[in-house]
Amino acid sequence: MTFTIEQLSYRDVAKTIDHSLLRPELDDAFIEAGCRLAAEYDVASVCCRPADIRRAAGLLVGSDVAVGATIGFPHGNHLTATKVFEAEQALHDGAVELDMVLQIGALKSGRDADVQADIEAVVRLAHDAGALVKVILENAYLTDDEKVRACHLSEAAGADFVKTSTGFAPGGATHEDIALMRRSVSPRVRIKAAGGVRTLDALLAVLELGVTRVGATQTRPILDDFLARKAGRTVEAAVEKSGGGEY
Image 1 (cartoon, rainbow, N blue to C red):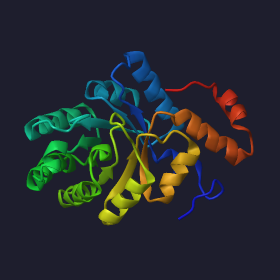
Image 2: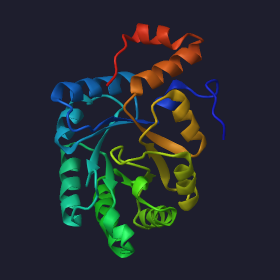
Image 3: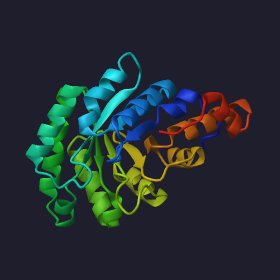
Image 4: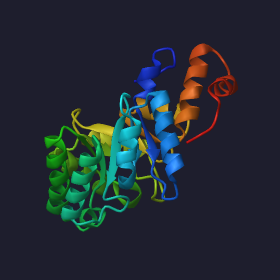
């Protein structure tokens, strides 16, 4: 399916974005500004570090922006019990979406049952609380066969999304990987692209491949560009009107 600016509403685009607040050096002021930006632009969610969940949830009360949290991030090779504890705390603190990294080493070792059980444990807890789970495959470290197996295991475990990347590996979302993932899960399982989607055109391109969520740090420029094109203005005029800045 091809998406054009004319066909899409602002909400269609904004609600594909999980505004990412994950870099290790981000301070409290940056997290707070990022949450305010997410609320201003009415995106789907903020995806934040576990220590920031409670703050983000408080800042986003009354908005239509969900609070997401990372689990087993960024390498995935935590004990399942650790991931379950982390997920339980995240849900208690206000997260309603969990982006968990699967056990990469176990997958590459062929221990598929362990990978599935690890995902199932987090999914069971999250779904009991009404929360979503996005399983991060970290495709940069996987062969195509491993990516397909990871998709099958994630779906069998009940995950809501499969996600390309953490954004901290050597590579991020590629069109080839997204197409492979879309073919490897049923329509019930959605696709999230993360790592390298930094412009409106890049976002539109992955939507055409079947993505429904995108992890983004360049939320303001992407959505300012959409508003500018929709209104027939230059993006520079839109940024000037909004006050500029990036989070």
